[in-house]
Image (tube, rainbow, N blue to C red; front, side):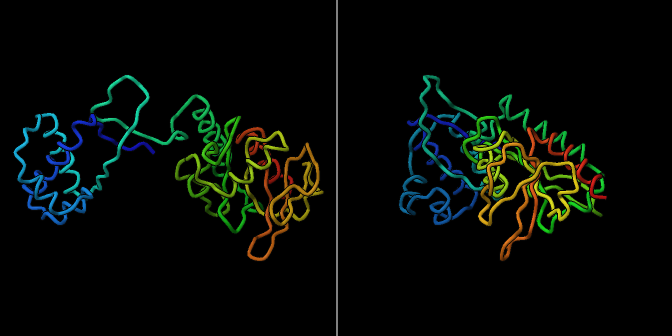
Length: 262
């Protein structure tokens, strides 16, 4: 998630801390608390507060803004930023992790997951709902880590055996599905996965299936598989995983599967 950040040049950093210290002190914040907030010693805070350095108006304005946020309970953390661009960065910006920057491909993944949710919404998938949270994960084409895999935050919301809602979509959040999907991408042409309940009569469906070992590795060398079964282990519920080219493909397979096992 993008967070607000204030950039100042290196020469202004010390002046900004002095201005913040003075501002907080004027707002009746004691020097010990200021030292904790700015991560400096209390004598240094005392030195800042008694300083007669001339501070530019733009720095004073920033200090006022920062101090007001601190007073309302926000945490202020001072970092050093190293840029390899000749452009000077000063003022307010929003910063985000690399995986959260919405590129065209990231946007496609999010849109596809959203479409998959809408396909499943209000459908009865009672026979496929596991004891654990149910989720769909989808990766970018060339995924290197779970930061390249998006899923529904805290899983899909299920009520009365129907998919009813979500808490949004995030990259890098579904660790188990991300780990498994990244592993399977090495061997299969797959970009999306959904966990569902174990299917006892899988051979009575029209889907190609295979099995995972206890440590979630492919048991055989299947190359054309729609569903992978895991028989469970101590503390691990038996489950199944529906695979697809994308999240919509997975959702369509789940809908068809739910109809076939009725």
